[in-house]
Length: 81
Image 1 (cartoon, helix red, strand yellow):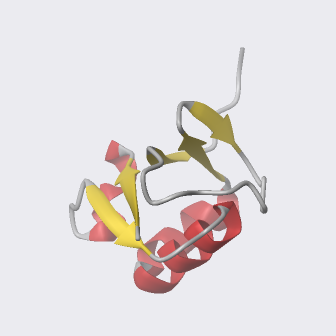
Image 2 (cartoon, rainbow, N blue to C red; image 1 turned 135 degrees about the horizontal axis):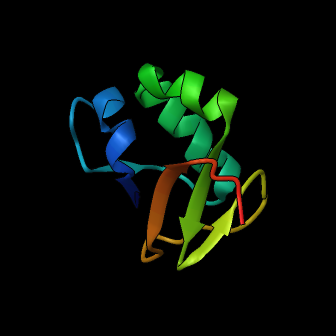
């Protein structure tokens, strides 16, 4: 299982949970499991969401591996400079 920290503004879709667990081995599986387990996240993920994995932010990096001891954070896609 992978522990995923949920960015503050997205916690309403996880019933306020700051951290959830999903069964996943890569970026795509994390996103798919989050959508399946928390349907309220589907719109945000479709609109754009990123995962920070061990301190590096990824967007649509489907095959990036995720390990049980990885630090994973789900956040809205951020733009700007």
